[in-house]
Image 1 (cartoon, rainbow, N blue to C red):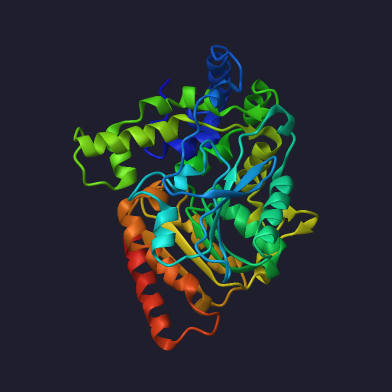
Image 2: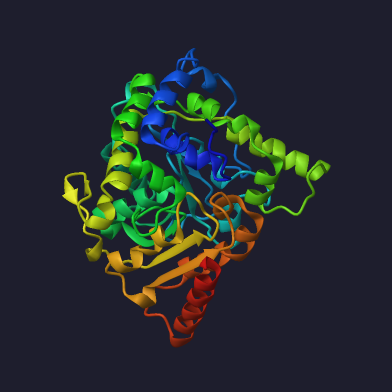
Amino acid sequence: MDKYTGGQFPYAAFFWPALVAASAGETASFMAAQFLGFSGNADEDHTRQEPEGATPSKIALDLHTVRLRDFTMTKSGVPALLCTPLALHGAAVADLAAGHSLVAALCGAGIERLFMVDWRSASAEMRFLGIDDYLADLNVLVDYVGGLVDLVGLCQGGWLSLVYAGRFPTKVRKLVMAGTPVDTAARQSELSAIADATPLTVFESLVNHGDGRVIGRNVAKFWGNDTVEADEIRESLQTLQPIGSSEFTQIETIFKNWNSWTIDVPGTYYLEVVEKLYKLNELATGSFVALGQTIDLARLRLPMYLLAGSADEVVTPEQLFAVERLVGTQPPYLRQEVAPCNHLGLFMGRQTLEEYWPRIVRWMKEPLGFPDEHANKRAAARRARSANVAR
């Protein structure tokens, strides 16, 4: 049996069992055989040095589950809170290196109060934490920075941000989502299709093997993340440096260091994500319950900006753009674009960071008044261009 060899390696690995086989039965038996060969201390990987982000920051708040990184340059204005994914890799996905840092792109385009959610690797004591626990801690972070934020959610951090906005609508001024699965049935990606077809018991077996956690080190070993090809890295980073050059070798080393350092995820959280988002599609069907309240997206009316990747195998543009028909936001306040990139290219691709994110920042800095006629026309033109790219 061959391993999945698609270019969206780090985040596809979040659903590792579904991506290693052509059928669910084959997946289950192969998983058991492979993981028998993985042994050792689950926390062994975290004796290694955690990759540092490229942009200087300070820890503004340190909780059991998360650190709040502070990049602010001023104390006034509504802060932007960057919600990174709670998946296989750390928050440096948004701050990899010079020229490949979303944090730097946001700051350089004019965001002066920027904070970032940096999820901690799950310890054994955290194995029973679920989505509600992480939402509650995200709420603590929002309250800490003033109680009103512009939320920027990446991939798995995007749907968490959307759910947070649905649960606490008065605490979010504007919402940006990039590469985010919302309606996983709108048009299935390779990831969501196989995840949907794989029995939940297979995912439960993965959690059981980790004694209640999904152990990132084991997932990465099976996935083969230590053998990422140079052309895959070049595609994600959108770098013009030729493979083998000293410049490319330097950024390749940084990327591989980030890619090889993994975090562990609570089994309860992981299984809830699999079931609620990918099995039952609860966000799209209106049955998602968060902190005791059903999330009715139709009642959500805040301004939103949606960014998808045309070559994203993890999240299709349709899965994200379904937001437009699910929320109550009026069309003038909802913008969407498709960038010509893969999944990671949305967050660390040089071209995407230079061309698309500055536009998002300009939108974030606009007042909440009704958009003018020219803004409407520009948004319509961008949607038309995005539709052509998606085709």
